[in-house]
Image (cartoon, rainbow, N blue to C red; front, side):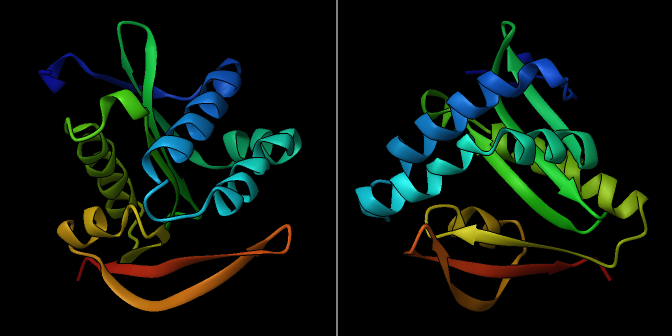
Length: 159
């Protein structure tokens, strides 16, 4: 696929349902080699928290990647320096969409005078972040609904 056909736009409140479907389908498919089904079910259960998702959409800088009027990825920046969400549709992996979204978020963080960008990154996404200049600060064990999920606190300094 030629990723020049991908358009990047700001999020709309009406995107929520499609974003949540992408979230669940991507994690369930792409992360199954790194996490158990029990861990994936706990992780994806966050879609039940509609107020939490709505708050994220209204309070964070969100970008949507679209192809033929279909959401194929999204990314969000919280408080100018925390990359909160980055997901690419399960059928559009390894096509440059994450890189295109990440590039836009990094530019926004730099425009906001952030000295660094940090994120809590899944085992599955760790290699993408390493390729983009992030370093692991620490390994974390997060509990969701009593289920432990390993991820990594990562940071990229701009100066």
